[in-house]
Amino acid sequence: MTQILNLQLDDFTDSSPSGHIVTPSSDGRIATLSASPPTIDTSVYKFTASGKFVRANSQSLYFDDSLSWYLGNVWTLRFWINFISHTADYVPIGQVYNVNNRWIVYFNCAGNYVAFFAIAGGTIKAYYTATFTPTNGVWYHFFFGRDGSNFYMYKDGADMSPTAVNAVDSNDFTDLAAPLEIGRQGDGLVGQYCNCYLDDLELAKDVLRSFTVPVSAIIPDKYTELYLPFDANFNSVLLPVIDTDIKYSGTGSGRFKSADKQFLIIADSDDFNINIDSYRFLGYLYLNSHPVIDANLAYFFHILGQTVDINNRWGIVYQENSAHTTSYIVIYSVDGGTLRFNINGNVSVFSLNTWYKFEVKRWGDLIAIYVDDVLLSVTNVVGKGVANFGASLQVAKDALTSYPHYFDGHIDGLEMYRWVDGNWMGINF
Image 1 (cartoon, rainbow, N blue to C red):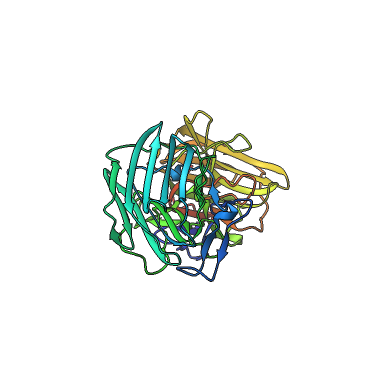
Image 2 (spheres, rainbow, N blue to C red):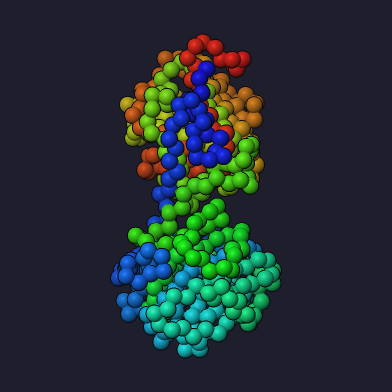
């Protein structure tokens, strides 16, 4: 038995003898721009380029609703802002469902103050203000953060000593069903469009960042939910990361966030040809969420596989039933439009934030599936071979555009073996 892929995910390298090149990738969060779109400005910037928002043209952008915009007990929001003018009120960022359910950062230019305001169900959850009178053409760094009952507002690394009109205490901001907007306050409320440049904007959760002013562009990490460098476009593209806090073994695991559409690409190789008598896959999965329904009425997370197109592909996926009471590990293959096999082993639904081992083995005509070393199924697939697909191997995302099934969670110890010498080294069905 020969190991042909070994992703321990203590880093993004393949430590098998094959040494395949692993490329962390992301399809990113794609911004929707206003009819008169903001622009990328390479003449006025803090780092490389900036986003220019012109109030007179009602320029803004938004990102679709996501759990990422729900501000919990610990979070950080920081950005650079440069005012073109300050004769009106501006909201550079916020999530607004309606007047009684929203959170915003608000510059009251007439009153010469900046504020953070959050309200849910008509009850104010947090309202902090601090004196601020901007000078046009100057870059300012703003930091807003929460750590439990403590709230922080800093400008250029200095505590603004905000006034707590309504203290945050232990208040929950509520998960709002609304997009995150940049450059204005949304949902039909007074627009409060910005007339400014923005640069290097980050929203991070479960961490309170340092109050120190960054001297270079931010390097996103596992806590980053949104990062807008405004260098080439308005999208937030975050690559998967190695998480050293959550791991099955070794020093880390690969964290993949479905909201950021993160995955790994490994170039095509004959190593990944499963049109052979015997092979073995194993790995460890840790779910951050349960899969949601797709256009094909299925609940999938892609683990790994090769896809040329819908008619030529193979993969191993994690699946749940619609009630989220049963989990399945599935291996399937479609060759020339013909389904060669689609085999699953089922078990009680995986709990979130828990490690599970999966294993798929083929020996001759039999395919066996295991979870946590318990045999779930054995299926005879006599005569059902698979073509040698000329496609990259992808981990945590299917290359099929219509059904990418981005994985949401952690993967560790992902390995693939091929049987080449008739000896399974004690691995029996």
